[in-house]
Image (cartoon, rainbow, N blue to C red; front, side, top):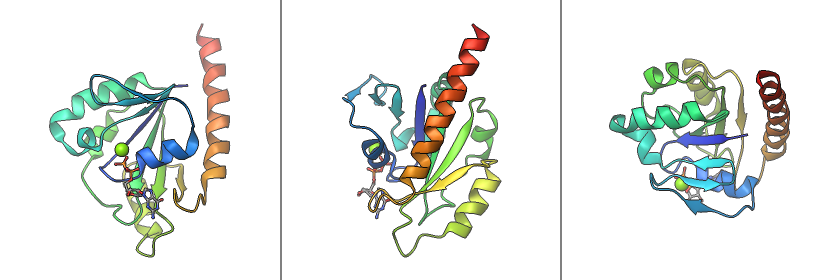
Length: 152
Ligand SMILES: Nc1nc2c(ncn2[C@@H]2O[C@H](COP(=O)(O)OP(=O)(O)O)[C@@H](O)[C@H]2O)c(=O)[nH]1
Ligand SMILES: [Mg+2]
């Protein structure tokens, strides 16, 4: 299962991948870092409209997108149009829930606005929420593998 992580600079994408995997890491030509089937995209791609086409290509090649939002700044950026063009299933992640300024009500509104119906509040610092996320990823992986077998 190819999982693409996207989100703003400092949203917590790299920390999350490091939390979820111990795999070897290497970087490709676009600056995306690949951990086996887990692709970490630079926040610059997400924050700069000029890169949306490229990001959309990468997104639609993946099996699953993890849309990472910093729970202390959930309303950052306008990505509604980009979101509409994504054909890959998207689940949301709200990071930094250990911080006092985390605002899960705002996160919830933001996810709703983005049409992301399933999302997980997590902390890369305390590991809160990571077990639930791992369980979801295992389940989704099984579903996606099954779907691929049916298509073949
Ligand atoms: N308190 C707290 N800090 C976090 C969390 N996740 C990431 N950070 C910090 O936020 C900064 C940016 O994280 P990073 O993973 O590099 O973000 P990226 O730019 O999306 O890859 C780093 O200083 C991390 O240590 C979290 O869940 N809680
Ligand atoms: Mg990073």
